[in-house]
Each structure stands twice: as C-alpha cells, then as structure tokens.
Amino acid sequence: MAFTSTQLAATIDAVRAVMPLRAPADIEMSRFFREHPKLGAQDRAFVAEAVFGILRNKIQLDRLSGAQPTPRKLTLAWLAAVYGLNLRELTPYITESEQRWISEVKAAKSASAEIEELAELPSWIVGMLREDGLGDEQIIEMGRAFGSSGSLDLRVNTIKANREAVLERFSQDGIAHSPTPFSPHGIRLAGKPTINRHPLFQEGVIEVQDEGSQLLGLLLAPKRGEMIVDFCAGAGGKTLLLGMLMQSSGRLYAFDVSEKRLANLKPRLARSGLSNVHPQLISSENDPKIKRLSGKIDRVLVDAPCSGLGTLRRNPDLKFRQSPQSVAELNAKQLSILTSAARLPKVGGRLVYATCSILQVENQKVIESFLQSHPNFVVRDAGEALASSRVELNTGPFLQLNPKDHQCDGFFAAVLERVE
Image 1 (cartoon, one colour):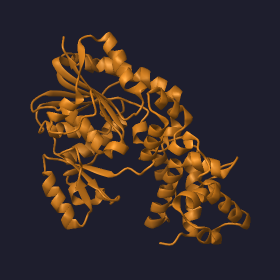
Image 2 (tube, helix red, strand yellow; image 1 turned 180 degrees about the vertical axis):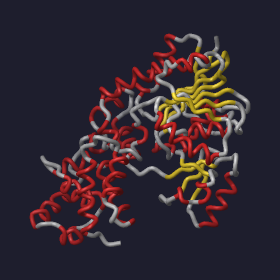
Image 3 (cartoon, rainbow, N blue to C red; image 1 turned 45 degrees about the horizontal axis):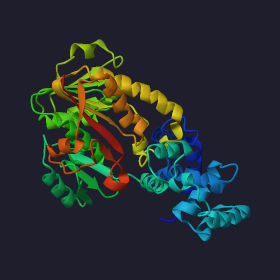
Image 4 (cartoon, rainbow, N blue to C red; image 1 turned 120 degrees about the vertical axis):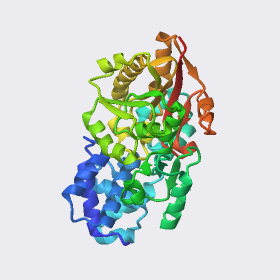
C-alpha cells in the first residue's frame, strides 16, 4: 500500500503523544487509537510500526534530527533513514527546505561511530554492560538483536490439546508457524496475526507467551500434587503454565500486590480449565499470608520486578524510561522479595529467581548478596534442571537467554535449593 498523508499526520500526532514517555508506549498507543477511531486497520498498523520503529532507533534519529528533534523531524528521519522511503515518495508531503534536509539525512545516516548509536542503547546501559565484562562488539550485537521486533510465541495448554494437534490446525488455517526450538509446548508464528480472535485462543487451548518465559516454568518443574507458589504472579502467564505442568492437581498460589493484575488473571484462568490455582492479593512481600506457608512449599517461582531491559524488542521505550537510579531502587526490592520468598520452601524445596533483565546487578549480584546471608540455600545447575524437563539448553550454571542467541526475550534465572 502506498504511503499516504493520513499516515504521516497520524504518525506525527502519535509520536507527540508517546514521546514524553510518561507511561509505557503500548499504553499510550492504545489511548491514541481510542482517541482516533476513524483510522483504518492498515493506517493503525503503519502508525504502530512507525512509533515503535522511532523508539528502537531514537538515538540515531535524535542525531539526524539536529538540536530540536520534533515529532515531525523524528518521523521524517525514520521514514527516510530507517523505513527506506526515497525523496520522490516523500516530496508530495514535505516542504522544499525539508527536501534538502532529507537529502542531508540520507547522506549522514551512517556517519556516527558512537557505540551508543550503533547499539541503540543509552550510555548508562552501555556502561553497565561493560562493567559486566562485555566488549563493545558484543554490546553492539546485543543492541542490534534487541532492535528487532519480537516474534509472536504461543504456549499450547496441554490440559486441552497437544502441540501436534495445534500445529496441524494452524496448517489447515493457513497460519505460518513453527515449533519453538526449546520449549516443548511452544509455537512461533510468522508475522503478527490477530490470534486472540482464533477459536483455539478463545477456548483456552493456546496462550500468548514468549518462549523464554515458558522456559522459566520448565526450570521450576512443578510436579503433580505439589504445593507451589508463584510469588509475583502478575497477570498470570507463568501461573497458568505451572498449573498446566501440575496437570491441575495439587495447590498453586498466585501471589501479587496488584488487585488489577490479579483481576486480569481471572478470564485467562477461566479459559484455561485449571482448578488448582488460588489467586491471593498480598499487601507486600511481608504479608502475614506468606508467613503462614513458611517451610510448607515444594517449589517457589520469584519472577521479580525488574528493569525489563530483556524485553526491549517489545518495549523499546524502557531503555529511556529506566535509569541507574530506578535500577538501584529495583535492586533493593529484588533482594527483599527474594529474602521473603525464601521462607516458603521446605527442606529440599526449589526456589527459582528470575528476571527479564540483562544486567548482572539485577541477576547474579542479587543471588550473590542473597547467598551471603542464606547459607541454607545452594545454587543448582540450570542446564541440568532443564534437562530433567527434556529441554536441551545449557547456558551455564544460570539460565541466560537473549534474542541474538536464542530468538526470545532476554531472561535470567537461578535455581536455588534449600538444604538446611
């Protein structure tokens, strides 16, 4: 479809709405589309691609846009330097001075050799990755991998169907797909079909879940009849996976401090067919409900609040909305939550600490701090834990995933066992 003046005007308006970054970009975009109901489906798709494309390439586009990167300049720079429109295609919509500027933009596109621009990562993230031992080439490769758009991964609910049956159904429906390389329950779709309208989604046979997130549940490896806690359940994607792995037996507590997030779990839980999930609103990580379960739980998953920098393919705005200060605040919270959750496992019980961050300060260093004050816990090898769930993936003692090497979001996980 040819580029249109409607798309240009709507994109500029959307960039103006999103760029203050007062809220997550996807929330701002949803609000924008609600306020512009006359935009057609193709125009909405173009605007969304443009806004997220600008966020993914904003460091380069800021340079190309000069001292005042206005929404119009950012949009035109993206169209010319990233999206690839030529001057002839843009000329009907821009002034003569903008035509001259666009020619300069195309010439200056590859002028910078700054690592921040080459990796499209702010200098504070580059600095932290260097402290973690990454070389500049590794940082650039990582940044470019995070600059791509994330795939649409699904998890098959084996309570209701097996993966082969769903793969066959997608073939019949003409939906391009492939099995995920690591998770035995995952399917990766080509493109971004509107899967939430598919009967299999509405019937609870499939759920949207990144393959990396699926691997966290397989790392915990809950068994039938066990007592399990999902300590930071959120909207419950991993909760539903854990309940499925337990074959809807035993007892699975879904803790969260947000009533809204737990409310979002309810319709998903109803679709899933699970009967062993018990959502529990808690006031904080030190809620009395947690104390009552102390030493009684077989396995605990702590998917801790984090910077989210492992999800930059889907949430490119996070690299601008987070900061060293916010990461430091998260560190204190992460250690507090892990310390509280550590009261739950029985002797021999498993605790998996996980984040969707790529920074050691949120990952290995939190585990190091925790172990210094908890000699009754030891680290178990993540590769061996996955192998017991029939997953052939070994990233060392900890699970460490990234889009460059594993084609999924960035995740970290440590398997801890209580040995007291």
